[in-house]
Every structure is written in structure tokens, then in C-alpha cells.
Image (cartoon, rainbow, N blue to C red; front, side, top):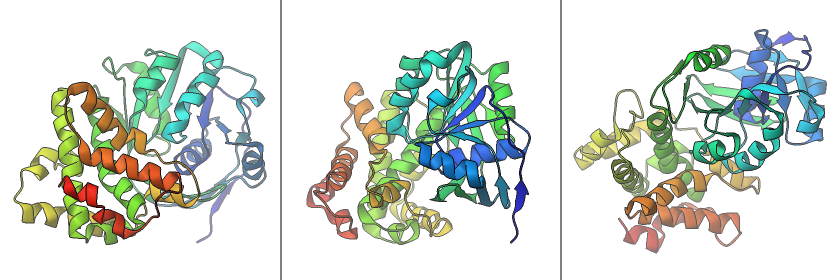
Length: 347
């Protein structure tokens, strides 16, 4: 299919997207395509040069476009202060990015997190709670190569403050993101963030240790058993935190899933796998590229909050350890990891 080329080059502005991966690339490109002036901050000058020269090609659920936009290789090249910044890096990179942007923020600036996992507490501690905005990204996205990104499924954005109700500023940010996908606001962003975190802790992490697509993974009984226990530990932690968790697919709540008869649990989880059967875990893709995963902000977050609340989370803890072993080349990626003796002993 022929793609639509938009050759307009935008000057610098007070809206930045930091991170030119799948979500950041799609966000910056579609904002620009709809007339919003955006500066895209890439991970290095080489990536910025490719995008400055060729633009970003976005295809998939959103159509097929090629968009020219301003891309820079580091924050020093911007030279102006920011009004709204969307951080679309990996979760473990947020701390460093937040420290770099603090001197460039206005008192009224807003910093929007767009990660898998929960980073809002760390982000708030650095840029300030008044500037921190949580964001749940509910569409699928894949980076194929620098400047080539695919929206693999439709979805929406959900925005909110972690410590106060939504306001007019949040509605304005939702309006900006509405150029990319439908966007709404909530007074309960932690409920939404935690709901997505649990699903990623069940699927992305198990996909990372096994090397399997979601369809192949969830056809395995052992993987479905682990899914149920990971979600169960996470919900026990949520209960101790007095956190109401939003439904994770349609109107199905985790508590509903956990109280189904076993055969219905397994049937429902297999349906999830079949719906997204070709999906490959973002954590798996990171490991294959020799990079660290976001496991500390997924299963690791469950373990951390469990310790704070006095809730044991042995399966989530073991999964964090196994992923770190793979990151450090002390374990290989194989479906046999689903049968790890210590992991299975907790079931």
C-alpha cells in the first residue's frame, strides 16, 4: 500500500517526545501529521540523523504515512524550555531522563510517562508531583528499524494524576494525544496502570523467559498456571494497598478471573493467547537485542510493594531473578524455563 508523505518540517516548540521507539515514534509522527509542532528526542545523534533525513514511516492500524519532523540526538540541541514532555523511553531509563530535563522545565510544565510498568513514583520524586502525569498506552506498537514503526492494534490513551483529580490541563494533554489515538482522563490512574502492569507481568515476562509468541505461550498449561499465580499474587498486593484494579480486557476483572473454576480460567487465558497469537513480548525483543528489560517495573514492582505490605510474592520474585539471569548471560531463553524447578515449586 502506498504511504502518504507529509513533508512539512516543524520548528522547535514546547512539546517534546523523548524516545523514538515504537510508542514514541508513532506519537511524535502522528502529532506532527496533524499539525502539532513536536521535537522528537532520539537516543543518539545517529538515530536522529536517520529520522531527520528520512522522516518516520508509521503504518498498520493507523494507516500508512511518512512524516517529516524535527529530531535531535540529545537534549542540549533543543535550547528552549518545555511545556509538555512525553517520555516514551523504557521504564529503566526514566530516572536518568527525568534528571536531565528538570533544568528545562517550567513551573507549569507537565511530564507524561508512557511506559510499561509503573514509574510515576520515581518520576514524581524527581520532577515534582505537580508536574507528573501518568499515562496508560493501550494500543500495540512495534519498532521495525529506526524511523519505521507499526501500530499493531488499535487502542487508546488514559491519563491521570496519581495524587489528585483530573483538571483542565489534563484534558488539554488528552486533546493533544487525541491526534494519535482516542484519549481520556481518569481520577484513578493507578488503578489503570496497575491493571496493565499485571497483564504485562503475566505475558511479557513469561514470553521473555520462554522465547514464545503469546499464542504458543498460552497454549501451554504450565504458562497458564503461572499466569494465574502471577496475577493472584499481584491482586493480593493490590488488596493490601487498598487499590481497586481496573478490568484488564473488556469488562473482565482480575478478581473475576481468579474466582472462575479452573477450566474456565484456562479457557479464557487461551482466548487471550489466540487473539494476540503473533505478539512477541517487548521484554523478549529487548533480550534478543542484548538490552535490559523492564521487569523491575513489572513483576519487580509487585515484589517491591509486596514487601512493603507484608505480602509474599515468590513466583513474581523468581521470575524477576530468572530474567536478570538471562540479562547477565547466566541463563538461556527456552520454553524449558517454564518448568524451572524453584518456579514450579511455588505453584
